[in-house]
Image 1: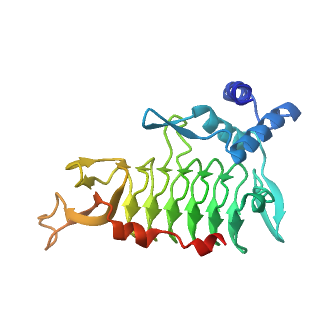
Image 2: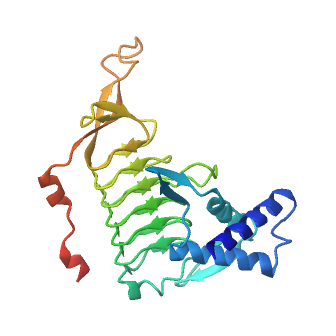
Length: 278
């Protein structure tokens, strides 16, 4: 089915790049778009997958998401007594309780085409955008945003007020990835296709982006765009190249991320209480 769906989406994309418009789209086109969104929600297709230890974007999946914007028109939708206007409705969440997943009231928003795994928790307010993949057993805490196409692994803890960027375009670029077992402290920001390696623990208010160096004290090297697996990371400030500029007194500093071994006490402190699952 996936192979046929991919072919249908690619064919639709080619037509969209030439002359197909929202006004031309009919029953067959919308059937493809809806089947594609269903496959995303079921976790059958993903915007990126890990191949040979590297995360690679599935360009046709991103094309399918863009088609759902380009070939649909804005319409009024009522949800919970609130009227809004969008090209996509919110995701039907009737399947969540049967898989042990729960979302608290007044502000847990899951957009159509987003996957939320089993035994997961979404606290309000929080938002998961189209194309995002949230794995089994993951906690999306209050005031969290999971961007379009972001890939969140299993048993991840996203601390309160955490922002996970997306990366929908360009279609060949891999989105933000947070691998299995990661714990992100409150107020973290992960953007621009950054990859957080599995079982890492990231301190609160840490900014992870390819433009900020990661000083990996385990391997004694500086890396960009990724945090290696099983690291404890936190934000620090290092001297900037404009530190002695004549226009101001005192030092100038820029952010950097320091990564070291995960200590046993750190792991114990980040473990979720079993009571959350009862």
